[in-house]
Length: 206
Image 1 (cartoon, rainbow, N blue to C red):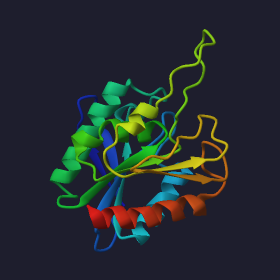
Image 2: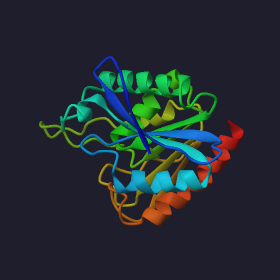
Image 3: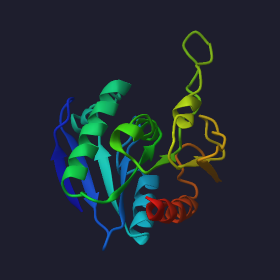
Image 4: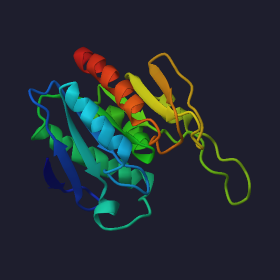
């Protein structure tokens, strides 16, 4: 594993590179809002991607690198993510098909920036479909539009008891339900199996 510190418009980010032998593509993953790159589902997916011959890069957003727990605003997350991916594809990962993704907040960033980064596909682990109720008690609008905007293949791996809801499938969107909640900790082998099979297919098509 190699660590790279990369400049972004909102401070340095850290990319953790996990190379596969004779890679056929690269999976770049972001973390959740309050978590880091050591989340169990991200670790399980890294192993599954290696088995499929895919490099993995786990990206720490600048706010986490700076030691803050509260996430940055969406536009800052997106700008930092785009800067990191562009630098990786211009350097260490040049010429490899890109699959972007992440868990929870990181999945949303990957969706919003898929076109800008040229992602061939998007992986969403525990997509937070329905935000918590607002302080007023009103229900906030869901985030389905971020998934619906995708024009490339999307895989959503969602806990069947996820407190943020269950996204529906779609024409280019596959939704796999696994045992557990938003953490996806309960059945990591199922998470890895869903991702490994899907990755092989989308990288071959890229």
